[in-house]
Amino acid sequence: MTSEFEPEGSKSERLVSILRKAGASTYVSGPAADGYLEKELFKKSGICIEYKSYDYPEYPQLHGAFEPRVTVLDVIANCGEKASQLSKSLTPNKLVA
Image (cartoon, rainbow, N blue to C red; front, side, top):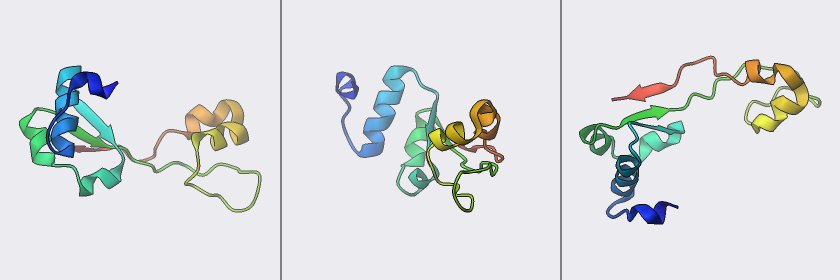
């Protein structure tokens, strides 16, 4: 549990504190975090931020037009063994130093 790390400070300070205590060198997050993370704090702490890219190829879905913003369970249910190939983003993650 994160409470075991005894984080203090702003949201970003608490997160960086937890990451440092856990020995992390990279924090992987969704791209929306770019709007609120204190990136300079991560940089000063030697922790790289990596924004996850969600650019997946289309695959056949049971009903209607392709809907890209669904759970990974959708690709598994619709594509079976091919799901692992289809759940890799076409665009690399964005690294923030």
